[in-house]
Image 1: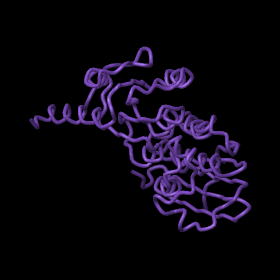
Image 2: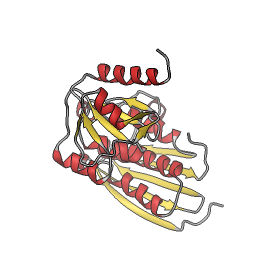
Image 3: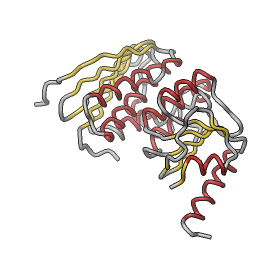
Image 4: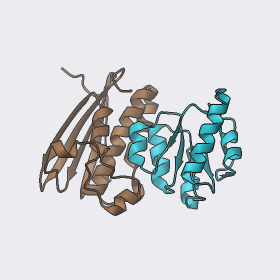
Length: 117
Length: 147
């Protein structure tokens, strides 16, 4: 499990959606720019990391029950997309890190929590 | 004999209308939620609908998702008027895609659409007439296989 506030801190991320519930927890994390792969393979309740910043990300999360989105490389969707995410209560955050670095930090955090090192 | 549907609705989908992509699938999910279906059934129906909706938007001129619900199953039929599919077996192969670069830039067209619809269905039928259109029949049973 990893909480949204842990993700924000680990990734030096900016919260894009107001009133994001920082205590929500994600059992799984999924990283992809292909929404087809998210629909096919991401588990419900997952945190999504993506380099794609458009309205299809929000629809995909809504359809497949993903719990929050991290946009990598400082990307941020337009205000209409952020407004739609707010309406659907889908937290969005943006990190300046690369996809690889963001995933690495989350993986290291999860390993640490498991007592792996 | 399959039970008579207790609820039916048709949701038109316009080819090329990427801006409204997901509207029909989200509507189907909301309707199923209001009817009290469990999360797994809703999710499978929404994913299958979304993929079918995207296929119409990406490839067809126009189409329609029809939802028919009985207490035990959700039936979704996707009908479109469009180019149809020349080789269905090939189109069902994971990773095979005829999507354009523009579609891929939107995050779609990875060649997972039809296989993913099948994966989320308990019954999946596809019929296509090249040059005319494609029809998908999707049945999702409550407590069906799924994942």
